[in-house]
Length: 229
Image 1 (cartoon, rainbow, N blue to C red):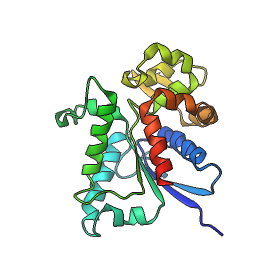
Image 2: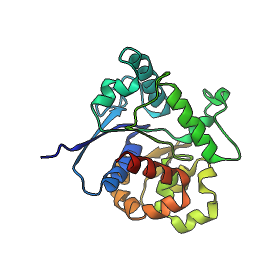
Image 3: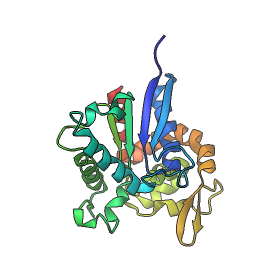
């Protein structure tokens, strides 16, 4: 009897995990698998964010910690995290390049969202130290955020008005006031509802071809995962 395929996730938050895990399930095409969200951990501690906190800062802290710990075991590829999974998906939105704490790194490229994603990807890789990352690591860097893919999947025709959609900032605000109720405005900030995301993941999967056609980073994420398989 074959063992289930083990997929671990390091993501910014719950809604990212919901979308990515559904996509991975579709890529696996019915293969039995086990998913494990290790950052932020699934717990009630600190508002379901764990000791490192949630969001992009939590992802960076997790990567930094792994880089420090992996020096003792011969590199990240030999770490306990990688030994306990067949695939590790690390997600972070490319819009972190514009965060005040990171602008000094020069990750953003005004003319090329793809270049920004490459810069962010390279920065994450550098956090693991001198040894190259494991071949079982799949980076997921949406431009500008996971909601870009969600918006295209749900509103492909409307997305044409915002081409190139990967260059549009705060695309999650385009989902505010929609019947799916994925995102609402809370004191000027976009607040996401995980339960509503769960209700639309099947539609995202059904329309994934449209997302891949319009979003280079969606295409790269899928190809990277399939290459691993």
